[in-house]
Image 1 (tube, one colour):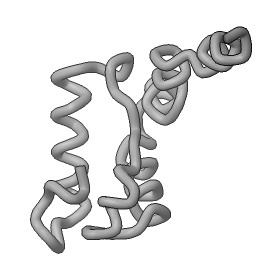
Image 2 (cartoon, rainbow, N blue to C red):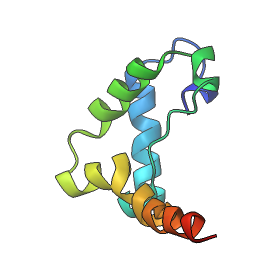
Image 3 (tube, one colour):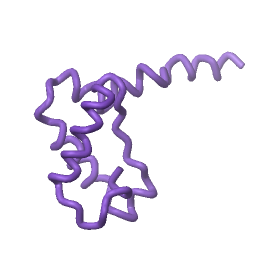
Image 4 (cartoon, rainbow, N blue to C red):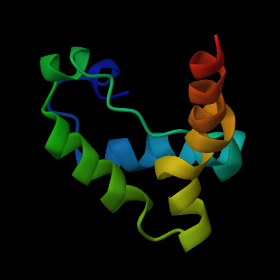
Amino acid sequence: MLTELKPGTGVENVARAIESLFELFGADRLLWGSDWPVLTLAGDYRGWFQLARETIAGRDRGAVASVMGQNALRIYRPNLQARHFLRT
């Protein structure tokens, strides 16, 4: 997302975009991602991670946990995939 915004876009524009995503999709359908290494065209990993966390910090704990990791675990189920590869 950061690489799609105009250079120098302020935190308020990022917050507005993230708010729109929550309205459109809800916390259960969003995943945080860094887009690394493409991200380095617009910023750095640590800065983007902090900005994303700060922007959603006001949401309830469940929404933050969902977006920042639980949804990815639910969708990609890495433990199940690892077991599948170990059996073959």
